[in-house]
Each structure stands twice: as structure tokens, then as C-alpha cells.
Length: 439
Image 1 (tube, rainbow, N blue to C red):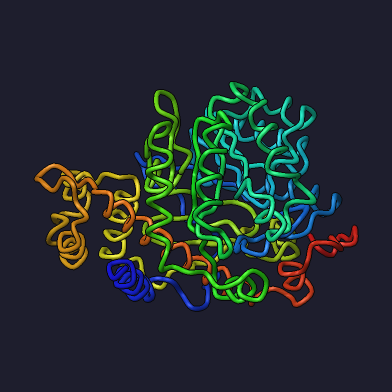
Image 2 (cartoon, helix red, strand yellow):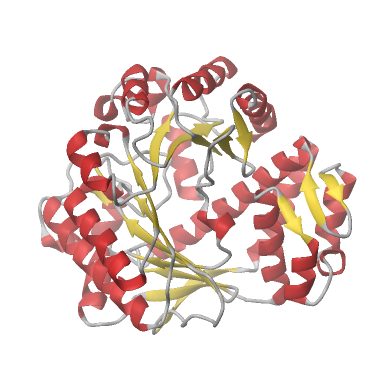
């Protein structure tokens, strides 16, 4: 698709100067600005199995280092409170946040104590959909997101998830049993996996509808350069040329049960919640090893080294670095443009109020591109909304931006010691050997 290729290239070039080639350490995150709302993101980088396509900061699970990490995570949360931040929403991602449910509960309870946090979202894996893990979370978590990726047994085996998490039929049964347990239950899926056929994708769509979840997110496969190379060796090359066709299969196949709430999130008709914090909150604070923050137009990232993270928090300092090269006004406008269209609507009046210039004058090339390729369904003085083609272009923009964030993750990993770096891309079988050296 010509528009996809041109847009991917254009976003890469435009954002290429935004991300720093080498993150620059700073003493701390900046404090909050008066009147702004922020979300708190907490990262738990431990998994029982390391998936070959994942670019996030994650380490093989071992209990002692993980418990030490959770203690450090809560201490960083206190540091953020001391900066003056308040939050009404907490998102806990990973990794696998439910890896130690007692530690997770203590972390959520502290967030409510410090910030009065009202709404909590967390992620989990299918093997954690059991009473001993879910029961303590029932009154603590409003939004639960389950990483399924696919219900196809062949794909689950390729992803090295079948043995650990069970067959697609078993996973479906577990999810069905949770109907009504949480206010919002999201199923995370992947489309355009190298060996995924159209038939497999259509079957996944039907399984999602049968799961009784009230939301599903179908992410296009996106990877950093290092993970892309690993994918090529294990399961094959990513074919972006068919991505648009696969996206159309999703939109058409889900349309009788779900409606789009972002460009790749589908909420059940008559009762769903958007579980995309980057849409609800323009700025957010990230805590934990490998977490990102977006504040005042700058990207901040916390060290990817568990060892350095634990040491810094123990010394009472935040191990953070600036991952952006320039917090220019134009980059902030581009971010608003991207996130608003990903959320399916850009408020032109709010854009002009916040940036002192219309979106047409501030981002003329971006506007021209979407107009030429028929991306806008509504384009008037009040708002921009998207056509079906425009929604796919929003997917392309978001996927390209996330791929560049993954490249920034790769840059951050270069700073950690070789033994920790090996764990990041190892097979996950050896864990941390029970050693405190990992944390």
C-alpha cells in the first residue's frame, strides 16, 4: 500500500530527530504542572517465559529478585508523591504484573494511600486466570487485560506460549469464566504475525467474540531492530504489505459485536471501556525499570538494569534519563496529532487553544497527506475524524512510533552489563538463578 509506505517513512524521518541516540541521565523527573492530569504507569519486568517478539524490558522470573524489585518500585512511587504528583488512574504493565499477587496488591494499596487512585488497570497472562491470583484483585482492579496474542495452537507454539499457557481452547474457557468478574476485561491479540494466515486471523476474531470479553485490542506486530532480527531467525519476516488487508479483516469481522474506540481497540457494543492510557492522558509518569514517562514534551526512561535500578532507589535517587533530543513545539503538536487521530478524533479548537496555531498551519504536511489519501471523514472548523482508510493510517503512525520507541529501548539496553543483557534475550529457562545479582 503506497500510503502505508510513504507514511511509515515520513513518520520515521519526522520522529527520527526527536528520539535521542543516547539517553541523557538527569537527577529526577520534573514535577507536575498546575492543573494538568497525569496517569501513573508502573512496570513489572518479570515473565515466566520470554516471548520472541517482545521488545519491552523483561527478565526471567525468580522470586527473591522480584520481591526486592517490588519494594524498590513502591519506594519510587513514594518519590513521585514527594514531587507533588497526584493521579486518579494507575496502569500496571509488564512483563507480568501478577507474577507475585501479594506484592502487586501491596503496590496497589500504596498507590491508593498516596494518591487516592480510583481506577486501576493491570495486565496478566492466561495461566494466571485462577482464583488464588484473581480473588485478591477483584476489589482492587477495575480493568484487567489478558495477553492472549492468538487462540491458534500453531501460533502459540511458535510464540513459545503453548506449553506454559495452554491451548487456545483452554485459554478461551478461562476467559469465558471471568465474565462480569472485572468491570472491564480486555483481550490482547496480535495480527500480521509472519505465519498467520487470513483463515487463522478470522478464526481468532470469532474466538474473541466467543470469549465474552468486553474489549479487545489487536496490535499489529511491531518490533525493534534487534527483535525483528530474532523474529526473522525464528518465525520469519514481518510482511507489512498485507497489514492493511489484515486490518480490514479485523474491522469487518468484529463490527457485528464490537465498535472501534481507538484505531486498534474494539469495545463491545453497549458496554466497553477504552484501556489505552495514552489516549486518555496526554502526559504520564512511568516508574519501574524500563518504564517511560512523557512530560512537558520530553520522553524520560528509567534504567533497564535491575541492578542499577535497585541501587539507585536504595540511595534515594531516581535512575532516569531523557530519551528525547528536542521537546520542540512542533514535536508536541505531532504527538497530539498522532494520539488524537489514534483516538479517532482531533479537537481543532483545543489544538489551537493549546498551541496558539491551527492544526493546518502547525502541521501543514501532515494535514495535506491525510487529505490527499482520503483519511478524513470529517474535516471542518471543529474536528477531524477518520475514514476507514484514515483509521488504518493511524495504525501505521502508531506502529511506526512504537517501533522507534523500541529502538530507544535497544539504546537503553546497551548501557546495562552483559550478564543482564543476556537475560533479556535468553530463553527464560534459567531465571536469575535465585541470585540477588539480578536485582
